[in-house]
Amino acid sequence: MALRTSRGDQNPDENEIPPTSSGPKLSDPVTGTHATVPTADSHQVDGSHNARATLKTVWSPYRFDLLSAIQAGIVATLFFLVVWYLIYFAVKDPSLDIAMMIGAFLTPTVDWTSRLLGIGGLLGMGITLAIVYALGLLTFKMQTGMGKGLLFGMMIFIPMMAFVFPFSIGFLARFGVSHAYLHNPDVMFNQTGNTGIQWAVAFWALMAHMVFGSFLGLVYRHKLYEGIGTRYELEYAGG
Image (cartoon, rainbow, N blue to C red):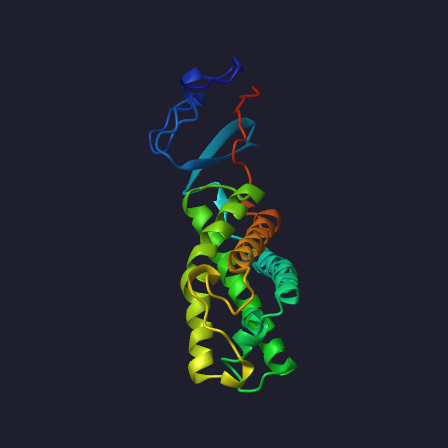
């Protein structure tokens, strides 16, 4: 519908603002699954008011935050290590010295050098998993949370404990640091050393991964596009 000024000393047709068909109308419903960022401004030129509005279509209301993912990966990994080494000191099986095991891939020595290198490697793995977690939720257009992080931690526990960890220890015990007396565990710690509490170790390892995932969900947050969910109205002021 055209807008007209309220001045009576001019021809109304000269002040008529014809409707345009080049862009979307604010009165039309927005179709599709994309979120929209509406913006609008109004300014005065030569005594007349011209209202303009634009709609910016975005794929998702969320944006990936790399800095937040790095922070989440570091925090979650540190808490993971706290829980994991509580298991290690309780069981006292060298096969559970995870920092030493990771560091042994980089250095043949079995001392604090390998452990420090291992902690660095674990932090790198934690940051990588945090990025995977964030991008995965971004794909489904979901904001993060403790519950989603907890589920992610449980999901990574299975491949880590069933394949990655046993293979790594077995590889090192055979070809790497055999003098470290590493045991070759079966799937899910079914035959870790001679402790007799193998499945209890597996349970606490699951707890460590759940702690890792929980802190991922607590620390990481997607960025938000400004204006999402904001409603703008254009009003002709007259004059």
